[in-house]
Length: 271
Image (cartoon, rainbow, N blue to C red; front, side):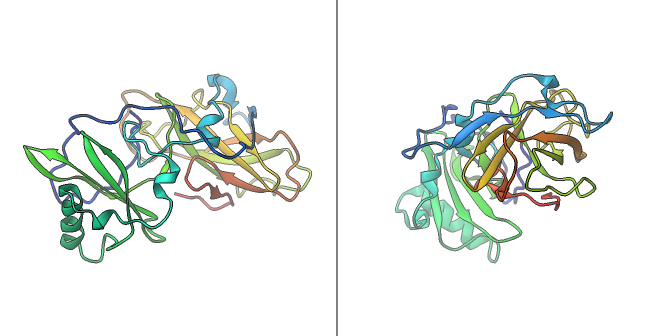
């Protein structure tokens, strides 16, 4: 299980789900997939070894046909689960009633409407709603704890694409101290931050080769990092590296494909 930083509002004792949805391959897409290719990352100096030192490559399907998660790879859902208006709070079943009670107990925090029922299995029911600039997505998962149906996970949903077991996607942005990208550039100076617990250490030797999805107007890049086992969770430092693109940038935009929807990349640290 990927240990992502899920910011939760503890209104009830957080318990483990009794049974969860098993990790699955990302759902098939009904539209033609963009071109996806691995791109080697190279060193930007003695402090930035090549990302390919760790070896391995994430299957492009994880990027082009993603399954989404709020941070738990045992509770996956397809992007289509967030399509259309969210009406989960209007349900007539007990889980929807717990959602409404949770919303009522937290005025000015959770959205009143617009909840999507994205996971529904014996281990629990997960609802997700669009938030605001500070908290783009919210989550409430309803399940059994001590024999009572209640909200067992609630707060911010760190929405992103699910990663393979033992791997997390880092967030990346352009290095503000590096050379600005030009139209003919194929290498970019970037900073990468690991999202999983890593004892505050840089991901040297654990960065996988980036997976790059190329479209007519964008490069969507996902950079995987192998899990640091038995780690605690202080803040992780930015990690400088060179990102090698398969083609010159031209007029195309850059996106971090580890998030959903993909985040436009600038020199601003996404946090």
